[in-house]
Image (cartoon, rainbow, N blue to C red; front, side, top):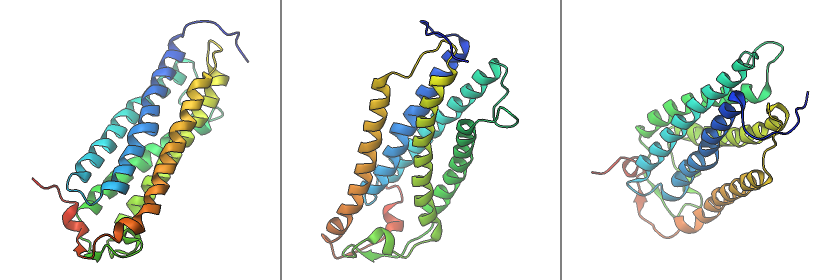
Length: 218
């Protein structure tokens, strides 16, 4: 049942807004930034520290954001909307991302301490052609999939808000525009990194040991 638009937020709506802010920062800023750091700066000694910091921040934002959403729907007498007749696809997506993110975090730490053979940067796509532990490839794929799910979660969350807000408010058009701008920029930057890889790889002929460059240098 729709509600006539009014000003202000009640408890439910306030919790959902807080949830949206935390999760959106994680999905639209810190998670994509972590991936782009790995895409563009993997050969730098500092890249892993920054990548890990951004991913940790993503987790720190996502967990309380998820909790706030559960508190909000439970306050309105809807349980968690993870099971039963009120089961909600947006909440299922959030739970799936949380589980995958925990798994991804563990895989990433383990993969970081595996050794990769040296390779020539003149290889067309050194990221794909370098002999390395399969966990490294799994980690990369998981990262892209999880980030895609985060974007999907934000989009479905905005759509859901228009239907469930107690005060009948709608997601501002500017917020939706900003979502698509940030989404487009992140995707373009990631794909451009792959386009650049053959050219950047061809600048040097000496072998480069990924295992050593990923270790933090004091």
